[in-house]
Length: 512
Ligand code: SKM
Image (tube, rainbow, N blue to C red; front, side, top):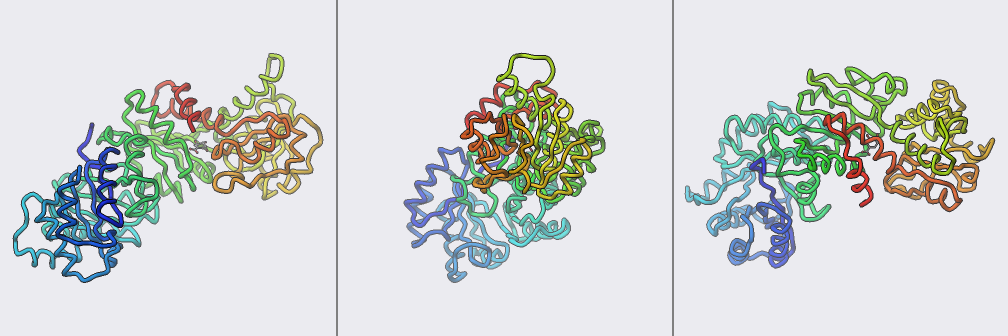
């Protein structure tokens, strides 16, 4: 274990018995403490219920009784609420959470009888946004001045760069020895929850089950421990991530984190829900942020955000891998085309006698989509000697890409009736058919018989409707999973300087 940061499981249930069960689960899952959300109880007898919970909890307890005016469920009078928290303190709670807005009243009622064992967390929640650094600094000062043992504030991420201001405050609190819990809620704030140990946060919240959150954006304890290697994170841990929008479907965190762990590489890899890459890079410019993968829809815009771009990626016009050099400069390259083209070649090779040169040479290669991945596939196919056709929803974009690679352009509507010959290759590079819209497909099933191989860059689900219909038509398929694994090899090598664990990557993806 490389850090002291605790994992706290929020416990919300209708009854005390259910709470006690969940608390056992929390312990089994690896949590360090539980947050008992008294406001979730349907009926509550303060004296006996708190006593039972304190006595029977398998883990240290934090009692929270969140009122509706701070985002909780308690709608009763304030005096009874604060009485219950005081009672929790008397009955042996390890921590209680009192809202900043209520702390003066709480302190007055306490008459200086603070239990020595119980730490008071004074908290503030902002469900609208993340204020400026200055405002956050003032907030922390006010919380500290209230007599808090531990400062807690949670804000809401409107943009992933909001998290930077909160990290800054956490680091600063370390310097002045103020224990702090600082979270940014929402999917765009996820890294604030995962990276607590790197920046020295006192605790982070981890849920028992997916979606059973007490505040937006909480990861599960399982993911914190098993995916993000939470106990191994520390000040020197390098940060990596996949830039995308959407991004929660990405399997990249599964691949890289497990591979990092297998060789003891001190890094963590996270999903980064990004609106604007330029702003991301401008904000997270330290050497800590060591590398990025990039997916839909940012692969093209990211090219101009890099300090240097590999010549092939520049030709393609899309970058899916960025590494930070020791001098801080960002270098972008494209590992997609090698990943996809080699997977396709492998299957084509399998059905033909071994020959020199690429089995793609001379084939009619139809690419659906003219975005980042479309450009990579078109470039790769062209380089292997195929004749390239681009089909895209917006015809003009198809035309532009076709002009670059010297091919033909179609609108997506024309695709199902396009079959100048048989034995063609089809590659979908759009997100059509990706979860959750798994019933979508870019081409009619009837048209698939003109193809000898169909590839889909979508990998969630592994077998898209397009691939299923290709299989039903007796056509060879290459899944997005194969491309996904292929493109990850080079990224891993660039991120770590180590050889890619190819077998491990295949094993991880086979299990999904
Ligand atoms: O090019 C890759 C990207 O590097 C990672 C990725 C993902 O994690 O879903 C998908 C592809 O766009």
